[in-house]
Image 1 (cartoon, rainbow, N blue to C red):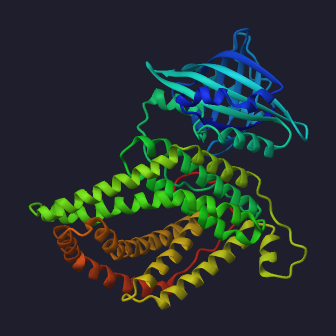
Image 2: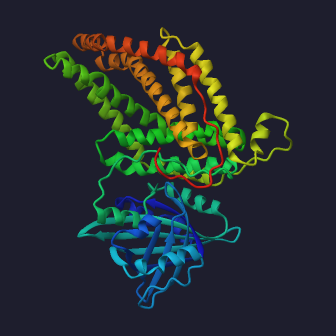
Image 3: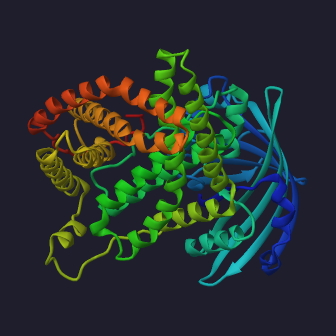
Length: 521
């Protein structure tokens, strides 16, 4: 069995010529060109797909090869998975698979006798082989062609960088150099993923956060790597549609993915290398700023201004103000999408993937500090319990200082609750499900109420900016403020009671978990 470590990058078709002109390609030890045709097989009820197995026959122009790949670890374009490849002699032969469980499952009569083609890919591959320091060999491929399924077709334009042997840091170094000149965006969907989606006519939907498969035997730094990888995967699964769709939820979910990664960075910072946070935080800020601005105007339009217009449809001043908001919203969205299309976006995500993949625990010289003790914790539950308790104490302290007359104190409490909720969501696999779910629902409800209060408190400045010096538009701002006034007071009354009940907050006790959890929270 070979373990495939591969970084998949989407390349705009318009940038293919620029990619091929890169001087770096002339440094390759070898260059080859192939025309590859691939048939992907599954049972009629997609048993292989459900099992996380891909079965492919590939024609290279000379012979057919059979390839079996199993689900591995994916992180927004970087994948590590087991793979078995063998010549195809007219029938499927799974005997070379050295994983007895996988081999036995594929050889079951109800599987092997029902295999049928599901979709096809055909592309021209230009492959370069790089011989690098530390006995590292990397294969770089540019694939251009198509995927076909059920009478439909999609184009392929992507770059794959695969580590054959040696040091994975060289893989990222090569990716960085390539991304300096052309927009290369880490792509989380494999050709197989896209083929199934095409065959099933899957309707695109925003990708939300899912449970991270943590286990009690993990070291804390391994848990951080898994959480960060899941966040980057969520980020990238929303990227393409954030560019193409008018649905603001795609940009919102990208922002959530970055916030979750930032929360994990804060949660695990005591065990990360000294410069790790300093390297990652500026990258996160660079992405979050334009996404946050686009989200602010989405909320202002949909949740602040439009409900008032719906209640007062004959008011021309409101319609004019909404026109101004819409223009600013469109400008903020264009600015966010511009970043998502530039080479800089790909460079940032590649760097985040490199940092995440290369993370190691910092072993302290002596257990003289609380942070040192955290780092050498043998298992994850004790580390997680300690962190959650600290976050609970912080929430209770912020609740004691919360004052309805001071919106900034409510906003600080909201941030504290959000950090606690994210931590609990990360560690759900280590806790009893029902009490944790109930606690998460309670925290989410309070965070939502505080979020509405914060949106209303901040709306005034944004609305005033949209109105400018126009007297009629400023009158519309006053209309909106007056209409939301009773709602704002009602939210404040509700949140006072909810804050008082925070003192009864009981945390779940984390326990050992013997299986991975992959379902959504």
